[in-house]
Image 1 (cartoon, one colour):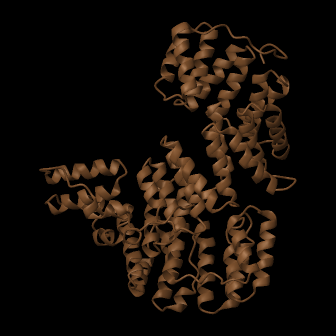
Image 2 (cartoon, rainbow, N blue to C red):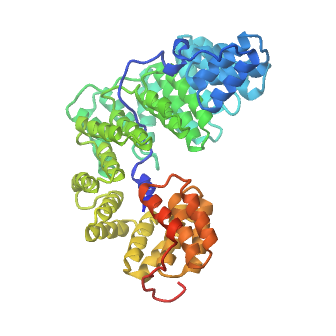
Amino acid sequence: MSRLAASLAILIPLTLLGACATAGPPPGQDPVTAESDLPPPPAGSSPFGLFLAGQAAMNDGDNSQAARYFGQASNAGLDGAYIQQQAFVTSLLAGDITRAAKLAPNADATSPVFGRLGLLTKAVEALASGDGKGSLAILSADGGIGYPFSGAGALLKPWAAAAAGDMKGASISPVDGGDRIVAVFGQLGQASLYERMRRYDEAETDYKALASLNGAGTLFVADYGEFLERRGRSADALALYDQALAEHPADAGLQRARARAAAKGKAPAMLSYRQGAARAMVAAAAGLISEKQSDLAMAYLRLSLRLDPERDETWVLVGALMEDRKNLEGARVAYSHVRLGSPQWVSAQTKLAWSYQGAGDNATALKLVEAAVAAAPNDQTALINQADLYRANERYEDSVRVLDGVIARQGATPDWRLLYMRGVSLQAAGRWPDAERDLKTALAQSPNEPELLNFLGYSWIDRGEHLDEALDMVKRAVAANPRSGAIVDSLGWAYYRLGDYKNAVAQLEAAVELDAADPEINNHLGDAYWQIGRKVEARYQWSRVLTLQPDAKIKAQVEAKLKDGLAPAAPVKSRVAGN
């Protein structure tokens, strides 16, 4: 079932990804921001027409062009704080920080929120331009940058102090005000600054505490390990990496760090003041991304890139946010900034590949992911994405072949998510006994995972096997994730296959409410309506399916049903009528 493909997203952890390197624009700036690259304004545009063009470009997510139009509207005589505010914001979101800083509204001339964002932008521009004292003065005035930018300002301030030569100020921990991001990444910044001040004992105390932080996984292990390597303690670094890899054996970054430490290679350099400040802005942005505040997160990422235009994970986060906004071209441009050889390069190539897959250019998608695997044949992320793209392109045996290798490397207890993924491909390839084995093994490892319960339970019902257990599994999946239209649809379709059409209609109607645009769910509801005699509603649902871009198989089914109706179903046997 096509709706189950989306559930494979659980296989891909939230990571900082990247892409291939190309010649780029000014630091941190979107290439399309350059005046010479933008289309001219509409012929004969009035100031108000330019303003409307800016609004339209902003609504389309093209901040670069919007910034240009707003600026031209202001230059053409359309005055007002609102025009300046829009020009400032769109320039910031497009990555033209130098221009945004010049356009930044004064705190007393606009709303406090935009005034504070303007101050933060000016502070970053000053620091990026080598004016640490100017940056520190902005961040220190009137108690610092106010809400909602106080956290970002607090993380930035120690780096500005260090750049200004104020080592006492740089040693003051950021005031977190209960903000977990500020507390944790403020401590990371302090560790880096202590190291730069040669206060090594204090630096190690902070690095060690962060590396052992509960719930952080391997997030700060590399920072501590790199510190140990820089101190000439390769053996200690190796032991740290080995300990972390014992719990996270597939972590490619740790694998690279371990190999470097084992070879006593050159340790990564300490962060510069600008690089440290850029990392602080990324941390602030990550918190906003988790809270779905994408516009402000994008602003922070652009500010980060003004400070460190070669920070690869920042470019990838920019690309991911652009993809969320359906700006595929902008996303691809962002991915293209990541340098070949970067730890993020392979993962970025797969992100790039999926952008083409989503746009229907399957050949380019496969070419990109295969090139990524060729460049890094042992990288698990690249291999998993290759397998998933093969599955998405109905090359199921190829997907299984790739996953066979990944799973074999994990030894006796491979990750259940990989077994689940291979099980899906095996089922689609017609190898049900092998698929069932993988799915049961995965469920034994993670018995309450709703996606697994849903897939295996539905598959059994569809085959007429283990009906009591299967229906219970699908019900448990719905109880665990009642807001998933796909899983509720599975329960409805399970009732349908069992001949309980009344319960099928109730569940499928609920599934359509949760995911109204899914063609398969609407198709199922039409079938259920037909079986209980509601044929007008059935035809309406089937007609609706054709407006939802169904795949070729569903489209053919629906067109046949609209022409000839639906034959009576032959339900599988149920243990008790009405289950």
